[in-house]
Length: 390
Length: 177
Image 1 (cartoon, helix red, strand yellow):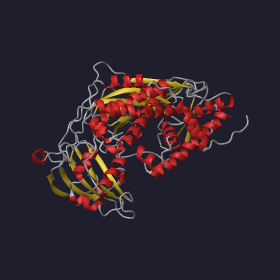
Image 2: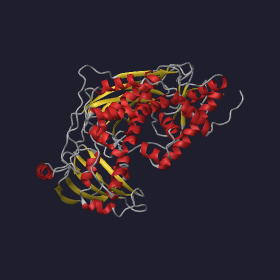
Image 3: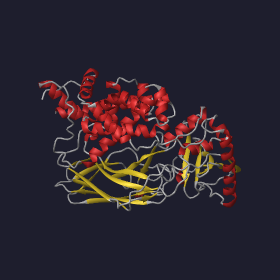
Image 4: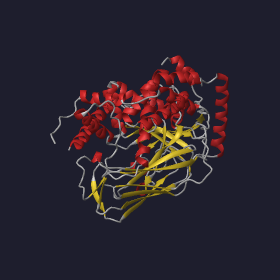
């Protein structure tokens, strides 16, 4: 075949215009279909009750109620020290501060019938199966998934993975349908930058509530995890399988607390593989991939937790944190910390000063997960081996 | 789209939202079709996009960001559509993969062959790669506008564009072999 010249910008534009022009649109029919779908669809109203929408009298009443509830909470149920695996020499006891009202998330209804716990898909002599321990999966409790990759072909299956001691074959995760993290209130300056960075780092900038299963080898590690970006090959003989377990810790994202009730289209993904007889693809990004979908439901029986942006807003009511933020070059060895501690039902929001060459220091505001009231301001050293990576 | 219409729709006015749908339907559908290359999927995605927009409109804080917000919903819907389609198929990669009949008015002979090769190569790209190419090279959005629409830094847009062009060229080379 005669070699072709690389596609230039004009050629690309031309092809894309052709594709767009090929779209046949019966506008009236599609409008009618959309209209029928919109029937019975209820708009999701903003639930955050801070900011301009507050009526002053109601605000005062709610704030007084929050103070009272927080005060009772502190007196009757002392908070477990947050991530206190490392010494906390400068913990400062604080009176609770008014934060946000606990606002229920709109609740989806669990389906009544039995739900599938197993799904499978095959491509080119490779079968991938995922088996959930249970469906629905209760929020706040661990649920395991077993993943199986079976070579049903006639020759070796080669797969590419990172340098972890136990390389992961299948990743499993999804996002909660029709549910989003609520937005925060108005912020500006360093506070706004901090909140944006914290949410982006936590992977919730677009509001999606992510559910992910952590490979068994990483279960129990705090914060983010992973291995270097390095491709190593392993092979799987015909008829053989690799079984691996992964666990959902019952929380959203990475340490973001129990998600609300909702449907999750879980996808088990197996990528970067090829058959030995076919040889390694010249471009791994175009090698085949197997995605196994399984509709799961989360039983969000744990309710009333304020959402990440709200927790940040509550923490930013603490002037000590704000004062620190205003003097720091955010992002340059100054990383946001945003975590929910389910054991204590508190959010930890603050700034980790990685203090290159010295001991890392964290400045944390501990926020009641239910009321949004500030419970503590903690300054202590940070131990990456114990506290993990934010 | 006039801010008053969006504000009315945000307050629950269905007629206002219907008016918004009418003004955006063609753009949304053609964007979905260009990314997905599949009529039924594009129609399904378009329906989902407007239903999601209606349901979530009250959460839109800045009315001036409506189009950027709708664009992100569009790309997410395309991502979900491709994921669903990838998930339900059980195919052999020995068979021609991802025949996405977006041939359109490709003409005949060499032009039609080129179009077929391009569509097959395009179908090999991830939805993120497809979307960024469509936004930049078809909708002719600038780097900053794409960054706003996708919610990523401008530098990331540049690197993703570079990567997407590279992936497309490699896919084309592969199809031309």
